Image (cartoon, rainbow, N blue to C red):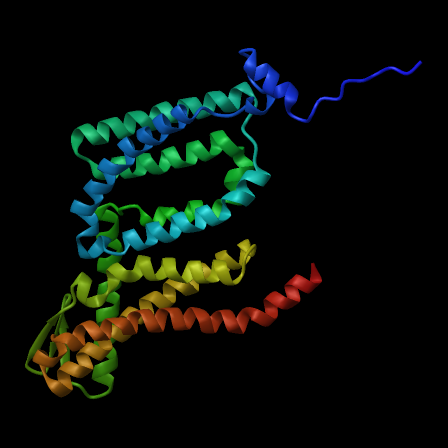
Amino acid sequence: MSQLVDIQPEGALDNKVSASGGRPASAKGRRPRGSLVVLWLGVAALVIPTLIENVQQNWSLDQGAQAPIVLAIGLWLLFRRWPAMRAAGAPPTSAVSRGLAIGLWMATSLIYVLGRAGGQYLAESYALYGFLLIGIYALLGVRGLWVGGFPVTYLILALPIPFFISHALTTHLRLGITEAIVQLFQLLGFNIVKDGLTLMVDQYQLSVEDACSGMNSLFSLSAIGLVYVYLRRPGQALYYGLMLAPIVGFAIFGNFARIAIVVLVTHIFGDAVAQSLLHQTIGFVTFAVSLGGVIALDAVAAPWLTHRAKSQ
């Protein structure tokens, strides 16, 4: 005797559960939209005031003009890498790992609050970066941080540099470049001497300031060179490390070329021409020399990279 079986359409059971006041199985595990809205409002409340402080105190000045571009590139790289980070990572499960994340979050929150209360945008900025690291660790663990290592590390270049560090670095670099410029042009027979960071070319006086020497572009030029290498040679961590020193060296040489051209233009055409629009145009030499050097060196290293890839 045959038995009739009532075959219900797919999804009917879920619909019945919903009608009876239950919750469909497909809705399980979903994060309520309200909690996401609250989360992003909290993020905005932390980030926006700090961004405003950076715009007013850092990005509007010569030494921080490149930071918004570096920040935008870093966030794009992180967004581009995020799917791979999610696929490789997993939230930490041990009590020690979770306790570490909570402790670091509380310490970073204290730094942010103290910085905000004291008007110290540097402390706020570094605390926000700490929140980013801790958040990625809480969501994806150490493995996720490792997979996204380059974009996460790259974002450090968007942070404001403490004055005593940037001043110490750029002052020594400017002194070294100024001395090299004087030695070169004296060798060529030019009437040039220096007094500290001031160059006397014929009857003209040139002051090698941060903006003039382009030393504030050192960090941005290095950042652009690193991005080029990263996108050109993905997954070559050793290569990134080996290219770091040459990238910085090309950025310094680009600044040397810029000052040399300013001195040459001043000698031939006078100070008025050198300090006019041509002075700003010469600034592109820094970028061209720096990036051109990185591209050329990468082309030279291509056969070695190909051989290394085949031998692995």
